[in-house]
Length: 262
Ligand SMILES: Nc1ncnc2c1ncn2[C@@H]1O[C@H](COP(=O)(O)OP(=O)(O)O)[C@@H](O)[C@H]1O
Ligand SMILES: [Mg+2]
Image (cartoon, rainbow, N blue to C red; front, side, top):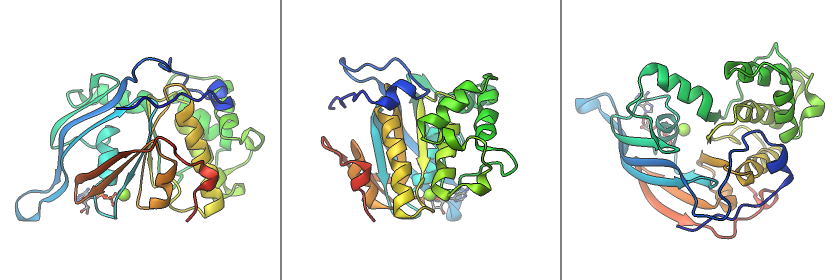
């Protein structure tokens, strides 16, 4: 295990989510998976989406999980994020076992500790950028608009706060979606093909925001994608195939998001 250097950035100062990081000591484990199995269906039609995954992710790491379509990436995100229960095994996040939580506690976990970013931004079209973010802030009991505005500032969109999604580019909409995930100050940020529907230039802007997020204290980002070009900017690259982890590699010198190309 290597310690990921904690790079102080402007984002660290303004990003919501400022969990007390541990920049000097050994990194804490943010996510731990033990023998995680996920099987859809049973018998002859059973689909083995995850076949016994063991994985430990340090707090503050930017992890990219690569794999072809159907390799189990989305399933992995969904079980870590508490959207789907694993068929077997144990998952703990920030030291807490989430596989034994009841429905209510699991909802609270999903709501408070997990930020999700998906390929499709799913913004509410009749709400402004700020209102889209504030809606989620309210869910976690934050009623003022200040933290929502700060989250938009962190993704470089505070000047678009009053715009409706339809008036924003795809990349800008995805950054609003990231602000919406960050306003909760999540323990972990899970991104499923976040640049899947973006061109290179807007994709880079989104990656740059995710990169800054992971460099802020305690910012743990897991990004799954079939686009291997994105792997260059990760602290760690995992490769999946047929529901298994095939490769696990640390990158001491990740490239800048601006250098990513596809
Ligand atoms: N809800 C589901 N019901 C049945 N099979 C599913 C379901 N979700 C995913 N699968 C199957 O599980 C495997 C892994 O899918 P997925 O995790 O979506 O892969 P990826 O995100 O890497 O494309 C695939 O074979 C897929 O068809
Ligand atoms: Mg997928």
